[in-house]
Image 1 (cartoon, rainbow, N blue to C red):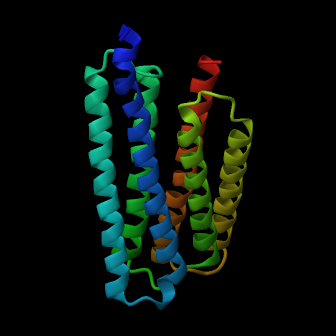
Image 2 (image 1 turned 135 degrees about the vertical axis):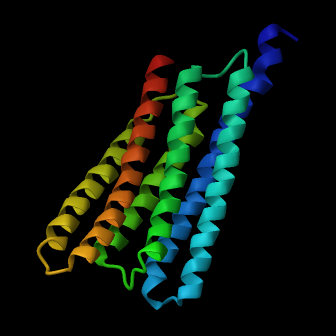
Image 3 (image 1 turned 45 degrees about the vertical axis):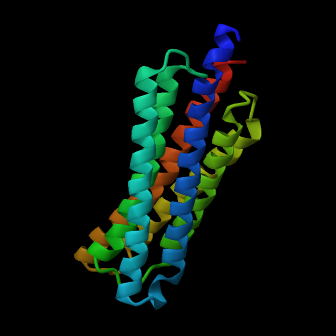
Length: 212
């Protein structure tokens, strides 16, 4: 067994752990979409139950993040630069945290009903997360993924447009100041998730370019 062969298991596990985190935040995004789509008809108890489930997904994400970073600290050889692995790991953790924060705001703010912007932004969140999942799954191949980047940027641009339209309507439809604060923060959190997914895509693109 050569020296490179000796290190292959250590290299491979970083991709495996990133893929585990990607699986985890897809689960979180699906739960968030289910939560939002059915929110208006759910009892308070069921709303809290789904939010708690998302929190457990976030907790699992923290464990995976800690595992990746701990292994990164002791690794001699990594499949891509340590800095890139670290940045992608932290951004993926941010996605799970933001999904959890968004669901919790509905409960904390005692939101009575959603609106079309929340539903559309949440749908884009799931699309963005699924796209990142695809990118992470392909990362170990270190091949050009032009369509992945184009799709990811398209999703983020759509979310950005939705976010600004939501704010425009929010400040013009006569809502009281408290409701404006509540809905504005939820819009912002949902838009931040797609922003973060785009940042992950940018890091993936950078990694692929370095290894081209």
